Length: 281
Image (cartoon, rainbow, N blue to C red; front, side):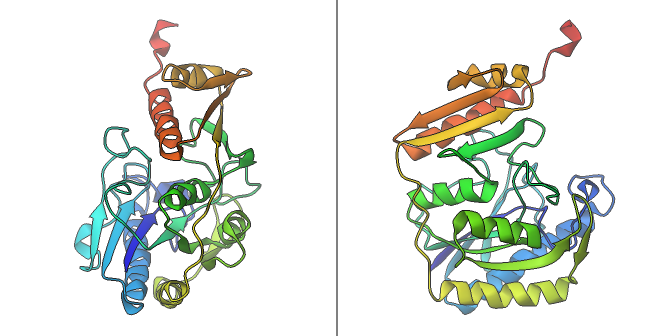
């Protein structure tokens, strides 16, 4: 059995503030340890259920957060920035070249616009007000699950704060195995489990989730992804690579080939991130 783990940081045990999330921030190095510990627990659970190969995809910010020298030796680590030339699907990569049997979402968070959501955003918070998939607001987890689903890979486990666990079950199904490692008290405060307690729960849930796999997510075709940007200049930069502009700030991508649509979406977001020449104004 082969397992693909998408690891984000906002939903890791103990993480509650943006200072935890970026190099140089208070307790960032501690948060890296907490995240790596959550991942290792998921790896151990997967191994107990018979996994023979596990890939961990670091999916947060610079995508160089997981501590390699502390990562479980049974796992392989995918790291490095989500430039379209490197990682065509943003947080995910290597899906066309390897066959996986199940996927885990470790340390993920609520989508942009979730009221009171802990560290809520979707992919690029500085750009994106909302992303919709097939007309419905979508979190990073649902977007990733749609990509995995195209390749026949079901999501077996998701971990994060309690607000995320409720939301991801709404998006992916009430039968999804989830572990709430902390209780969200708002956008930047939590009541958290200790790492040993959270890791014990993740380890047990990971093993159980692989013993009876769910069906992969099938969003149907044609695939339609709409991005609402915060400002029209962001949309204008993104639209230089394609998509259909709607109104002042929305860009839409549609097609029958799901991977092609998602490649275009991620390339557009990368283009929109390019420096705004404000010094010319």
